[in-house]
Length: 239
Image (cartoon, rainbow, N blue to C red; front, side, top):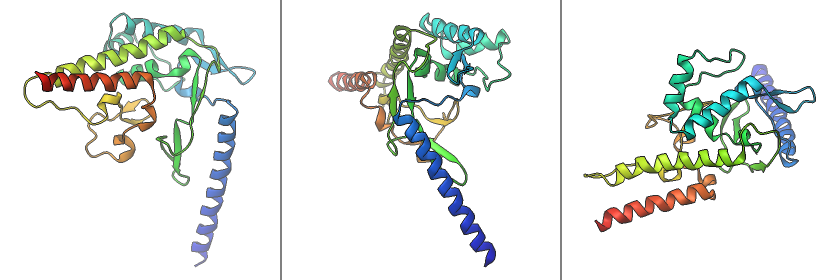
């Protein structure tokens, strides 16, 4: 009985601490003050004033990734090149696999912006987190720090990501036989499993991986992509 009581007290204390920490972070987000995980962020480190500062050697790698991609290379080709050259950042969790390259290309921090509260804690005991799909407000802070690539280059990379996705969709939808594509594909859905990792065979995965990311539907890029898919389906029906 004493163990049950003590366990109850411990759980209550953990929940209280978690709520206090969550409140502190959300207050920081509301004020437009971003939080950086430098161990997983190529190109930046914490400066003497506590603000992010650019690491020149790493920033060159980020710029190279964007340049190579816009020149026609795929994430796998970029990954293969980096690995062949033996490029590594020992002090950071960077493997330069294709998924990491894609995550870098999609990361708004590299153009100086920051989306806050992308994920939320669902269990204060296990500390398990999931992608924020509406459970809590998200905040966009523009020009929050010094960028590594220009906004024009970043936006061009997002357009190129969508364009390549659309090309693959055209092959699928307009091919002979019954076309198949996963629900959410028209929204450029990705299935993040953990940091810089994606689940490519998610039929047994939970909803946090397979759920539709409705919070992205307002994006102009995604709206154009949904319209493109509708056009392909209408074209197939007509012909």
